[in-house]
Image 1 (cartoon, helix red, strand yellow):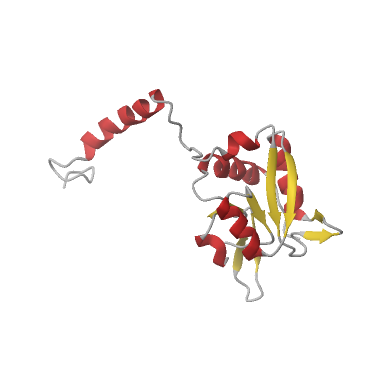
Image 2 (cartoon, rainbow, N blue to C red):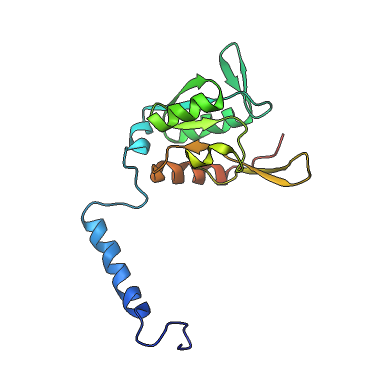
Length: 168
């Protein structure tokens, strides 16, 4: 091993030299990173943000079909940054995650945590707030987006991380 940690004659320095060329080459082909294969961010910007909301007080509350709560406020703020109108769909988590997987929704909220069983069916945002669960363990609250729609996910995460969210 050399002092840099790369084995002698290894591909380390060569890889480092080629990587910038690969990035420039992809950019020249019109490929951007992160990207949305289904165009979620572009479709939502100036259009509609389709959000599934599952009741989970105090994070999300649905009264007479109108959602309210901490996460609803976050989503509406995010939609404002995209000049998008929010279209709400209320339902149970399983139904909403199915809609997300089929491409009928762009986002699912409902007091979900990073340990949610749905994390294998959807992309999970960074935790926008951490609370202590009943066992005294920290638990990060997250939102769900479609798998692979990384530009949309990154834009949402940037927004969430810029907020100063206090646990209810």
